Amino acid sequence: MKKILAAACAALMLTMTGCSFSQGNYNVMHEYDFTQMELVQLEPPQDGDMIAVFDTSLGEIRVVLYPEYAPNTVAAFTERVNEGYYDGMDVTGIMDSMYFLSGYTRDEDGNYLGRQSDDELVAAECNVNLWPFKGALMTFSEKAGYSDARWFFCNTEKETLTEEAITTLKESAQKRENEVERENLLNMFDKFYEVGGLFGMAGSYTVFGQTYEGIEVIEEICTIPTDENGIPKQEIIINSITISEYAADETKE
Image (tube, rainbow, N blue to C red; front, top):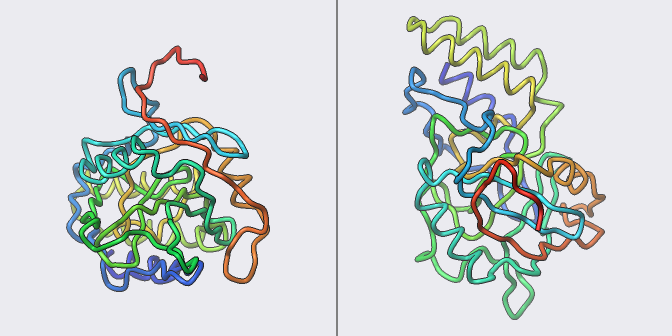
């Protein structure tokens, strides 16, 4: 299973705007206890859950956050949000309809930066309950095992997340002796094929949120034409991000 997972990750190594989206050999899936896996992202948000509302120039994206699974990541993100750090930022890059990336600042020479110093880095908080399904909100840094101010939204990778690829993964899962582990893995692979996502990111980048409203905005942004470096030819602005609490009868502000 570990070799199959590693092969899947290798197949989905990505690059964008000069920043490698490969974390090299960093991947913690071999540490996961799959008998305890619950695919919480596929459950609807509950009253009182922490949410983030992304107001973009192409529409609104609403995301439930997971401080119980990624406490340090969520804390760093919400601190920046509350400081207005992301207000007015542009979408920095888009990769082949698979994801879009933001969270950069620029230095005086115009170079993109994800942090001012390594003191801002947060250790990765990958979790067996959180996966890079379509609509997942994830952190990024080029430093393996860490994240900084950058984040990206997953869309899906149709060319590699094929029925054949999922079948290969499921065949490996069938060899697991533990019945609960086996069934959990089979279910997870089925869900990836059903809802989409970027399986090759799993275990390398922290998932800390899941879109529950506005997936069509992610889809639209991910289809914007780009130059050869993945930089969108159309300006897309993150007007603001607001931290709030989910209410079943919520209405948009």
